[in-house]
Length: 170
Image 1 (cartoon, one colour):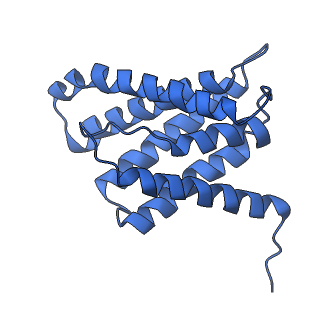
Image 2 (cartoon, one colour):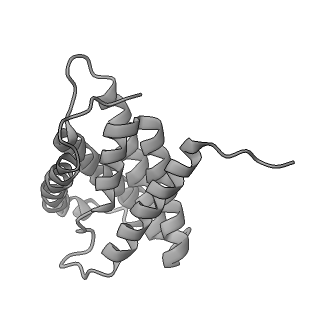
Image 3 (cartoon, one colour):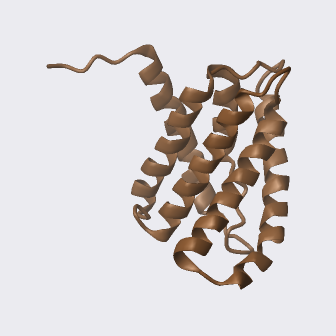
């Protein structure tokens, strides 16, 4: 039996490969503080969300985390768990945002929502699984501010990829 591939399968594969490439390049950038990364692979997720809809964006985001961790050697490590948790929170908030009535969000709004949800999810998991101490929350405002700034940047880059805003597709 042969598995039939569709055009959508190839699209997801190519977009995931692009996101993984950016993810790997970004992992080589030194971080001034643990947890602060630009998250530029999320530009691809936001662009995919705007162009192809939430379902394909979810595939690209989750496959990026899975395959990226396998390539970088972090699969099933705390880094992987935090990254996956952040991605699930991010994709979940984007799912809700796509269902908002009216005009909805543009790429910058999606970028901010995704970045803030990602950071919040990571903090909750870190506190529950790895650092069960209240002092971890002293870092939360600093890292949430960084997430906000990088979410704006990701949204601006994703918006620059299109001549006009395309409404989120479900």
